[in-house]
Image (cartoon, rainbow over all chains, first blue to last red):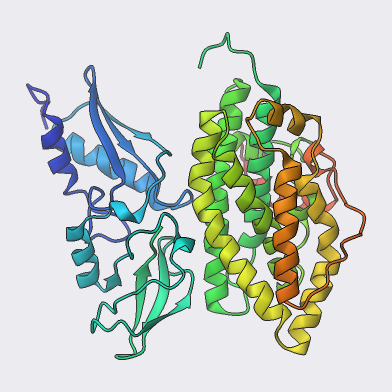
Length: 165
Length: 256
């Protein structure tokens, strides 16, 4: 695609990034997850600041590439991503809309108000299938670094819980 | 970064020590992938390893930046020889049975977490930022390993016995984690890193209460085995590096 004649505004770029899905949980976007921290022009270069979810999450590198590719497709020629560690990512940055999308996808959204997982010893986790809160943890870890394995004592279905972090 | 900035040798050492602990332990527990006694434990160990390798990238990335010779985190991980590694001896100890793996993990996590909490207020912002990120992960690791020590220590006769054997074998390596040398003293004086003696006090207090609950007896007076932080390793590290580094040694610069 040909280059753009004018620089798109930050607002426009944020809207474009809303369409970039998380590679592991494609129902939510990188913006929904709260990992895009800033969008800024440095001269003719567009710099997107991203913060990692977990420091070893294999999706991090893919996310940076996906963001760059999505913006190039929109005609932004010079784009780079920058990693920022502090303030450290927290699941409290996941918005209400994204929490609904996670639930509809079968993942219980993270309980709010935890600065890290250990803060909430017994979070109230609603089963994404039947809505019951009679749920229990099966294992602290799950299919991706951000999830734990849970099950529902009412409908007996197992499910992923997006750990509050 | 400019070439006029003098390399901070002590800070470089700190980044290597933190990074190498995470790297070697991550490599060790990564070996359980596909072999752990239960699928949940298999996944847990692989995830903890992943966090540790991620943290390694941050620490060794910082070390390379501080050194200013253009070495990347990968260069430092895959192209250094054993004597240039700065991990504590504890993390290079063999996986042994599952009790050994869990005990080694607990003895590390119980130190790692308070150490990172303290590093969050480092006078060096780069160190503080990495610690802020890593601490959240380390806390979850500790929560898990502490719980398992209690459940298996105060479990069946066999699990108790195995945990006790592991503790007897591994406790002598715990002291190195908080034994300060001149580098640690220099970093503490500049408020880049905490007073390790203080971290050690907190560490020992948490070990005491966990082992009491787990009905285990630590050999508190055992002589401390140390030297890893200064590059004097057990023979184990050579085997770890041989496996971890062979690809980059055989095919320098190979990428996938």
